[in-house]
Length: 147
Image (cartoon, rainbow, N blue to C red; front, side, top):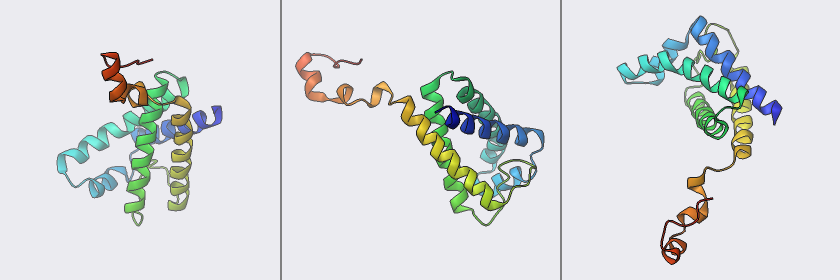
């Protein structure tokens, strides 16, 4: 588990800091992927910051469940974007030049490790069956037991 945390946190931290330090092809790649003009500027400005914050949260263990699920969603989105736009450089590590195969492999590792982290974090209270079971709620006269 510690290896998965270090891999995910380190990868997000390096990626975010590299984009903040020297964006390289990242802004151009975002404008190709995000067709809405105003949204691409927001993504270019905030995605590196979000990667650094998520990386620090995963490494430190703060807000463990929320950060693990956020990393899982982000890594699935990163991989989906890479699969759709495979022929173009993504600028995932800013000005650091990485081969497309290596970048794809890093996205697969990020997704696999984030699945491990999300599974270890457990399911949030809202997704537990006991909370959503309507017959139990009716029988008990309330929303059910939400332990």
